[in-house]
Amino acid sequence: GYPKRAREAMEREFPIVPHRGSLASRVVLDRAPVNIPDLTSEPGYSLSYITEIVGVRALMAIPMMRGGEPIGVIAVHRAAPGRFPDDQVEMLNTFSDQAVIALGHARLLEELRIAKEAAEAAALQGLVSRQLPQITQRLTTTLEKLQAPGKSAGTRADAAAWWNGLKQRYTRSEISFALVGPVAGLMLPVELF
Image (spheres, helix red, strand yellow):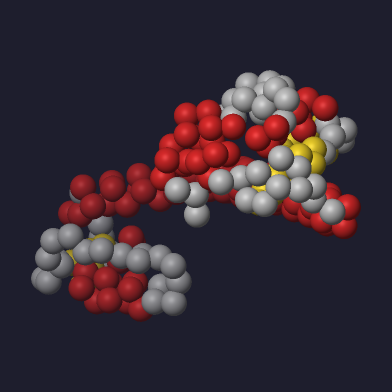
C-alpha cells in the first residue's frame, strides 16, 4: 500500500548493486541485522527521499541466510521513531529462518517437478522408440491395403459401423477422435481390423 510516488521511486532504485547507503544492502554486506531508530539521522543512508515519501522513520532489517550466504532481506518499518524491541527483532529473525526453509522447500519441489517431468519424458521417449517400428509396420500395411483394395480377397466392413465401434471402445479414455469427411457407404477391408 505505498503511495504511487514511493512505488515509482523504489522501482527506479531497485534492484541495486549492494552499497552502504542502502540499509538492505548493509544487511547483505555485513550479514547482520540492522535496527535503525531514526532514518532521518542515520549516517550514510542515501535513500532518505524514498523514506520521506513513504513516511518511515524506524527500520529493522534481517538477512535471510542459507549456508552462511545471504539470499535476501526481510525488513519492517514504521512511521514513529525508536528502536524495535529485542522480542520483535527475535521474532523477525525466526520469521527469516522460516522463510529460508520455505524457499528451500519450494526450490526442492521445483527440482523434483523438473526431474519427474524429465523421467516421464524419457519413459515416453523409450515407449515411442520401442513401439515405433510396430506402428510404422502397421501403418505401412494399412496404407498398402487401402491403396490396392482390389488385391484384398477378404470381406469388407462398413466404415460407419467401424467408426462407431471405435468411438465406443475409447469412450472412457483420454483418447478422442475427430471424423473428417463422410463415411456413409464406405467399405473397408476386414484385414485392417
